[in-house]
Amino acid sequence: MALYNVGFASVFSGVGALINKKPDEKWHKVLLKGIAQGAAGGYLIFESKRLIGKIESKRAWEYSWYAKFVNSAGTSIVENAASNRNFYDLWHFNIGFNRLELDTRDQLKLKYKLMPLSFIATTYSLVNHDFEFERTLQSGELVFSGNTIKDYNASGTAIANVVVLDKTEMDNYAFLSHEFIHVYQYYDFNVFNTYLNKPLQNLKVNSNIFDRVSNHLYYDLQGLIFYPLYFSQIQNIDCHYDNFFENEAGYYSNTIFCN
Image 1 (cartoon, one colour):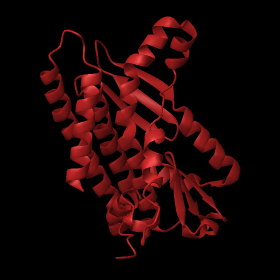
Image 2 (image 1 turned 120 degrees about the horizontal axis):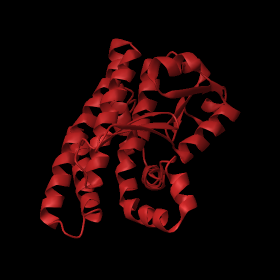
Image 3 (image 1 turned 90 degrees about the horizontal axis):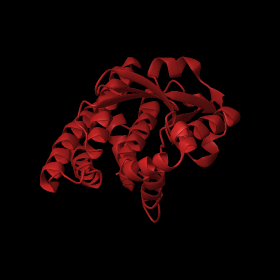
Image 4 (image 1 turned 135 degrees about the horizontal axis):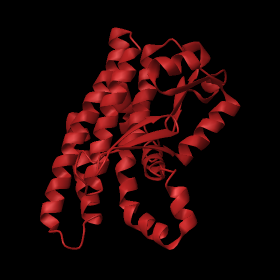
């Protein structure tokens, strides 16, 4: 699993760095820098997922917070790499649809941004399910519960970066850990959002309204790639965990129930 996380981040960070290359930069230097920084970020992401696994093995929710900080650092480094920035230029931390960004360039600046698709997922969950304040506080992830989840032959689901678990499983460390990994997988695909940096910047230049709005939004469009890949793997499989993303979530959370 380490090879997947490091390899995925390094390859797509390298591609992103080339997309965001400045005209006067040499492509091979930009590519190598992107790959190297992406690999470093990918390793931190791998370690964050291993920390999520300790929630179940240690039966301690606080490991979710430890993992969250490590994952934020890793994902920040990957985003910087794919944006052709220094690895330390921009750091972010997500709680639900809220994204805090710390810009270290020139002078330290802290900025709040809203993630639109995550906000929609949160609103949908709030309308249809019960908000679990205690578990959210313990884990740092938005957690909801419902009585109809098992009607869909599942104990839980992750909608973007929002977790919904069957109410009877709210104390199940393994099941919640499993869904937290799905949230991290969703963040893995943040790297593809950087491919839109230049088009979005052009829109900002040509539209004052778009510029003002974009200062307060992070366009979390990675689900447009992540979910088609996820659902493409659920056809004609013998085991739920033949889906790679389910297998990875099960690997860290110790929830693989079939061979």
